Length: 391
Image 1 (cartoon, rainbow, N blue to C red):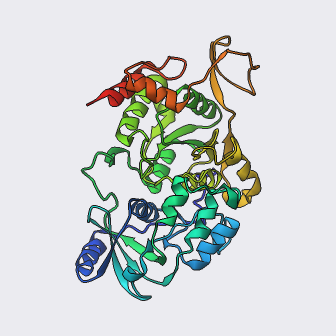
Image 2 (spheres, rainbow, N blue to C red):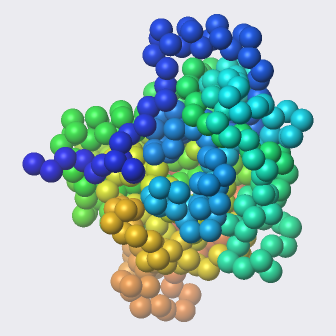
Image 3 (cartoon, one colour):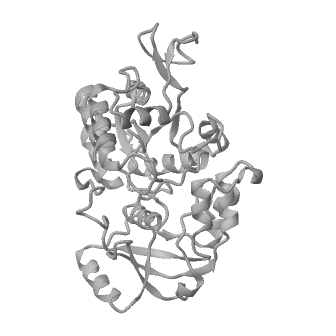
């Protein structure tokens, strides 16, 4: 019987030190130069450690950096769309051959790194991944601007992770839902699932999202609702509030035996099409076979076309990516059909479909007004109103 899909690159990476090695690393780190990671770098460190970024074993060197930007491939030929780098200021850069302690923003020892390469960080080149053409860079894209503010020097090499979750007591830890790729794969095998669809989200699930998930469940053995809980931009709804929304929605509107909720501790880049590919490859490592790609996946503002994140999969080596993208049209509630529809399933009738912008919903919530049932489930609306009006 065919087993689960193979990890990207063929082998699931595990850079988490066992208890004996962890004690050795903690003692060694006391005498090492340290680098304090940014929130994004800390997320990346965890993703490397647990194997979610397989086949990466550490932060990228120059050859991979350039290859990823130029061709969306690692230097070994495997598809990869976004550089995963450890950028520091030149004055803080270690030397090749050094061992370095990597500390999370809160000071916790997260990993120890063997420095194999130190090279200039071409921030302007990296920023080009966020745009279809150079003229699109207006100095406002949150992902591109974050890259431009990073250090001018990249430090590359394999890592050994000491602390997987750097803030186990923090509100965003979700330890009960923080499954590694090895753990989700074990869960899928225990459930007997062979085909699994993943839904990526950094927002509460509204009715259109629910519709996409239910469509995916009709064609796959199971569904992984896999919210991103790493660094996001200011203004996004906190992960703790979103998790409450996911749980109440699953409890009331999904079949428990066919649904799994776990978090992904990655940072958002808001890189649109390229980030959609990254999210798919990450889910491949978690054991996913199908990946839901909706309207403007991982987009921000108007930098990307509505379906650019779907079209990019047609440009990739399907045999290497292997994930089957589930490309969905924009969905909305039809008053005439009395249900969720899309441009593929129901004719457009003027004034028929209920559309609400994110801004409109936030304004309603701030006033304590309930979004209509055509947009979100009442149990979810209760949670969002309580969040928006507290204090």
